[in-house]
Each structure stands twice: as C-alpha cells, then as structure tokens.
Length: 169
Image (tube, rainbow, N blue to C red):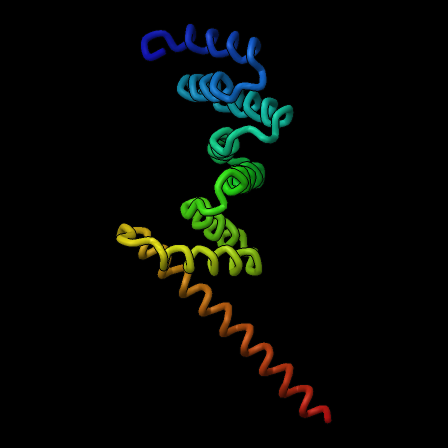
C-alpha cells in the first residue's frame, strides 16, 4: 500500500465489492483514497456504505465525519460524529471517552439539555476512574464548570418565575 497507492485502492475496491457488508475494506478504501487526496471520493464511498449498513462500526462513522470536516461540510460531519458516538455507546454504555466526546459535541452545538445530561454522566463516571490523565482532568473540570453555569442559570430562571408568580398574587 505504501509504495503503490493506486494498486492499494484497486485492491480495496475489489474487496469492498466482494464483501460489501464488511467494514475493513470500506475503511481501507476510504483511507487509501484520502491518502491520495481524493477526499470527496473517499467520503462518497464511505457514505454509500453507511447508507446501506447504518449499523457499521463507530470507526466508519467517525471517518466519514473526518472526511466531511476536511471538505468543509460541517453539518454532515456533525451527523457522522454523532452517529459514531451513538454506535460506540450502543456497543459499550460505559465507554467513558465516547460519553466525554458526546458531551463536548452537544456543548459545541449549543444543545444545552443534551450536553447537561451527557456532562452529568461523564463527570460521575470520571469520579470512579482512578488516575485520570491531566488532560482529561482538565476537560472534566471544564465540563463541571459548564454544568455549574447551567444549573445557576436554571436556578435564576426558577427564582425569577417564582418571584413573578408571587408578585402577581
């Protein structure tokens, strides 16, 4: 593959045609096309595969997201990243990194209710993991700060509504 990328592309294409439901040749083809800077072809092929096999592994969805991001198709990329996280969590509900990425994705997209739920679970999971690496500790602290911010906003809104209700009496 390293010395003959066109040959690798052809081999992966043949394997993908012979075994259309198998993710390995599909991912290999997408990677080989990407390596040759044929990102649009890689994305189109992988998305065709994912349309036929939506239960494909999370890695296939994640790669489709990466390819779409590189093509500046960010909305489509977000859909693929979301699907990758959902697939990962459907396989292992205790996948800490998938929960962390899901919380970060919802936060980035401004989906506060989903982000709060994901951060709440992620922070609780992190408390049960001994010796978290420093970079993860920082990310969890950011998530905890975001949760605190949202909880404060909710409490202020409730207080405001209660005060308005009392004032109307």
